[in-house]
Image (tube, rainbow, N blue to C red):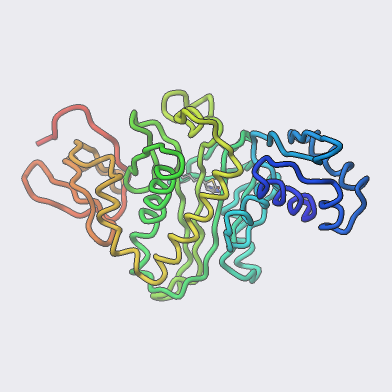
Length: 329
Ligand code: BTN
């Protein structure tokens, strides 16, 4: 990543397509106009388009489709995201990297974004397809001062913050499928979340929240079962702007979680984005299936399941599949 390129891009993003003179850029960054020209020539090779007019200067007219470390950094600064974020080309898993950095004593919170993961991890030991495809592979590491018992609604809350952000910013309505998936209206997966925590007695020692968000594309192998924001949007999508916005939304959501103010909104927001409400589901708990109708969650984030006996039970963790057949007796 180049701090100078990112700063130059930030100035262009601020200008919103208006031209900036080479002279102004040269003065602002303390380098020659020729050096500015050379930097822009290099950025052009990476997918940026600048028009150049001898009287007005340079204007940014197009940016790369895929995630670009300097552009993402410029977007993070433009959107005033405070969370320190490292963008890396390739890593095994951003969650694993965040865990290693926490173990080595790195100050938290911090975020890691990778353009590609070689061993992206999903829940229950599954693999997360992580090609270099303009999708977001993000982990945020925290060292929260909270009791373990407070952690249960965390992933749902982060997922709800994401649904709300995507709804408001992109006009795309996703639903949250308890406990960790973001789906479109047809049930195709757009994002998955993986939270991993280490605990000391009754306190959380550290916490890593990972999210894989299909911005540009979805894995070909998962046709029908997965889809991307790009495929759901009528407007063009800027992956770098979206990624920075997501980071900002998660940062804000974390602050509300840490000071407990999220409770004011938690259940209401869940009801709004719950895609299981009233559906017949099968919940698998330690290999055992439980059938019933999903009736939302309680304040701890436990799924409320109405069994065929009429009794309602709370489920703290498990795997949910939608059922088309009738509730089993
Ligand atoms: C799931 O749906 O099972 C959860 C998927 C979580 C994937 C993300 S991608 C970024 C972070 N790093 C990983 O290895 N996994 C999470």
